[in-house]
Image 1: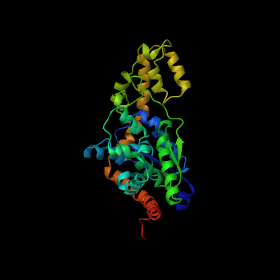
Image 2: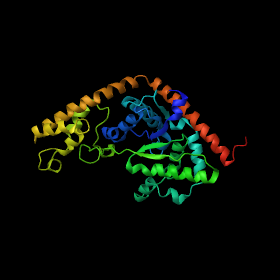
Image 3: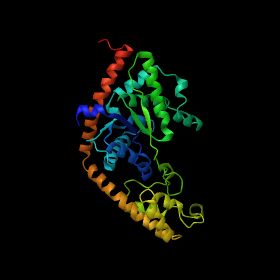
Image 4: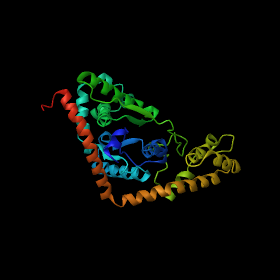
Length: 328
């Protein structure tokens, strides 16, 4: 891609914390949409592994290293082609934390106390780290460093972009026009994927199906799906099974299948198991192939960091000049 082509496109940025292996709920909830947006060819895409954000949750060096590598592999396995986007690690670009500190200096504590993460922790009477309290400013730095036009988020994550917009506008008022004002790109098709117990799929509930699960793991998970009276209703259709099945099969096919096998829950689970295996197998095989060359994965992240630093450092140079700390 030429520099002219890159400059003519809008910039898209998304960051994901490396806090564990993804499940199919993560994939259909957001990851698939990221790949779809990349493949439109309309955007200059940055996909960031937000390891400094993850430090609020993970304080084990080995776990952090493994999670970072795993997330990079996961994203390439689902179709984030590093030849089409910038895939990088947040901690490899020092401008993120430097700009976050500058934003801290112009931000009030009451403003940060509105953040959902802070309010949630306070409501649960949890000990709140400075990192959790200040995370909106690091997130604003993540976004604003790259002249980001759009940030793909779910409806419940709009506040992340609002903090970035407010911060850009306040900085521009104080120091002159410096930052673009990013827009939230609401992922309208974000699916709430049911877990094996009918609740929203979540690792914390233990009701998830891994995105790269083995055939045996798939069978075990599907056979554990709740199909009692709370899930089946009077129709004889196990809604939890149908809800997961609808992610990978079209409605016409499923309506016919579930009508023919009405009330035969075991057979319907077997059909779901077969379809999930067919869906997950190529993803798992692709992941295994990528994971076999970890050195290459690390080199891809290093290359991405170099590309990200070029843009981020250019922005930070302008910021330093505008706030008066650059003497050149």
